[in-house]
Length: 201
Image (cartoon, rainbow, N blue to C red; front, side, top):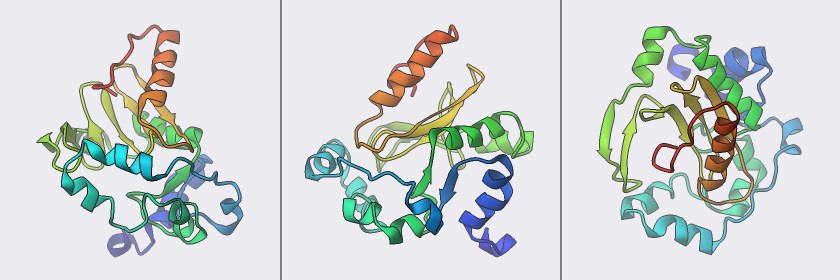
């Protein structure tokens, strides 16, 4: 982004995507937004050990870059929240995250060809970081249901291409993806869609 456009990822996101659509999501919080960010809780030794216990050694090495990504002192700190590290420190509301995916679903952000390429499996098989079968598009996890991306602790945003909707769940308390899955399945039951199991979410 910097090479092609000159703007940082956070500035580009705000100028081109979130700002024009009034979407509450950012890479790198501004000083006025720092007070709106919730304190993440549950980032303790028990969570870190449980999160890493079933994963390959490469996972432990990956989460140490950048350092502090699972430290409450770091992730709740001013410097982390103001930094622009798109892979790990996006901040926003569920409505804001869902709005980005809704714009993708509506064809408002990418051409049909580019979206199809980005959301098609570019690599698949056993993920050497997470330790399970996975398929990745260009910046998205992909499966037969659609595409999206989860975050540490159970937050998730994505599109169900089968169901024709965008969805996001955010939490400030560390856990797994079960709470978000329960909320999405409650939504699906309201609109007459079958529930997802944990392998599809």
